[in-house]
Length: 599
Image (cartoon, rainbow, N blue to C red; front, side, top):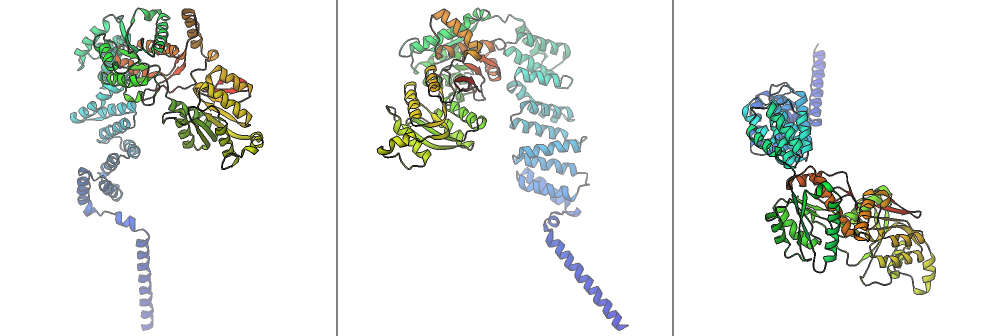
């Protein structure tokens, strides 16, 4: 019996020892899970600490505590509150995408929660920060609809109003009103739609919207303002619209100023409906930038213009842009192409794309669309940061391409052979150009590369193309303005070279009916071919006339210019990017003796 008890005790001790080791092993294997556990008697203490951390803007700590509370008490009545606070912490930590997902999940998981207004309000803020004004407004409307307390409703409404007043176009307001015409905030939306339509000169739309408000919301809080707006909308919209023009009509650049005016006046005369409604107030800048700011003030204060066109040169545009932006007056510069001009303000629009943008667009096309990867570059030594070459090189390297050779030549270069031989040497793996006694052999050896970017004027281009041909360098010639010259294209065809270029010089009559129409009118009126400046003048006025159909105020013109998506002028398509620069750059390709537009 004694021996049996001894055996039994030993067995129990063995089992106890084994169980202990198992517990220790489990604890060591998952220490995080055990450390996250909050026991019921600790709930209130941890909740107070989490809320204190949140109030003190210690969002990392607060989020950690709310996460532990939600894991420890999934069946607690305050579980939804824990989830809400986790999402709010992430919002304050600027993790907007993750926070947005959590707020949306909360709405699906707790569709009857009293916290829904808070969720929609936060979603509205997130959409606004992500530059999604329509989604932002819709979430603020939901927040208002679900709110039970007056304070919450007021907060949602105040969050919505700035979007309706300043951010939305007429089209966006129409979309929002159609989606919410049976909601409590419908009167507010229709009021701002009517007001904005009137501001942009859309009198018919303004009358329809304001009459709808008057008939359907007779007790709306904006009813008195609606009656005043109806009086304005009912008055004749056929007033004379004055447009200020800043051009050099005397001085060194007067020939270009007169050419610009020729194009603008031709656009007006070819639009009979605009002839009696648009009046040009012209100021002579004399080609100088010193008096431009004063001339802008005169046009706005004395002549009460609603838009400015010009000046001709980038230096003058910089002065004019500062005044125009401060006065919230749209300014369209047809010819200035210096980088950063459009970025001087929200009301500044640059019709001629910058050289840097042209180079960038070319690089995107040849790398992404044409599949080219290795490039050589031949550029002037004085090329600036905003040049085509800079935009091309930076973008090629960003997209994974390579600049395998680069030569820079002085501005007075007459013979391009040394620089092209330098490129060829690099392609052949030589550390330098070959000795002169080996030149003939060196010249005959062919080399191939994907593309050769060239920046040069017309005369230089002839010599460069000739030397490339003699040196047996093969690859697509990539360039900008000068490559659109008919004579340069003709020479490239003779030596059987493929070219890809972006240029306003190339007259694409076959694919641009507007250009054909303009050229015909210009020849008939002035007995000569139009130049690029007159063409840009024509397009700038034609562009303005297209937006004046629905916009009658400076703010309305600015909004309408930004919304343009399908304007086609004599120089090609126009679409302004967020910073006001024309981003629609036409790219052409010379292949097998034929030039065709490829973008």
